[in-house]
Image (cartoon, rainbow, N blue to C red; front, side):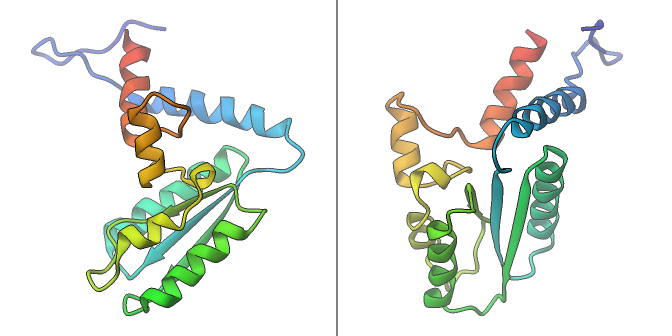
Length: 158
């Protein structure tokens, strides 16, 4: 690793782009050895601009890593029943490896009930009660992406 960059005041600049690229390359290499590519499914409810950008980026990174992805969009006024039916369908789909219900969901929906439908092994955001409980107890679990990214960046820079 080359010498890290610093600001004029001496603060260390943590550049996550090179680390991201390395992680994506490592995942891509691992995916090549699988019998089928993992599939990330996202559920985006409504038309929140920042959420749309975030979901689009998730799909782009999944594709760069050699994975498949599936974006399920629902209108803002979707019923709880219909939103739950979609999440249940993804949970039961053997071709879907991971599910993200993009937060926040519209206020009229019970987001916790939607998250509760995601099986532990498909909870790639680590937001279900089971995932959080396992993480808290030090058991095998999927760590939420943002904290994991911060930890990887800190480890990368020592």
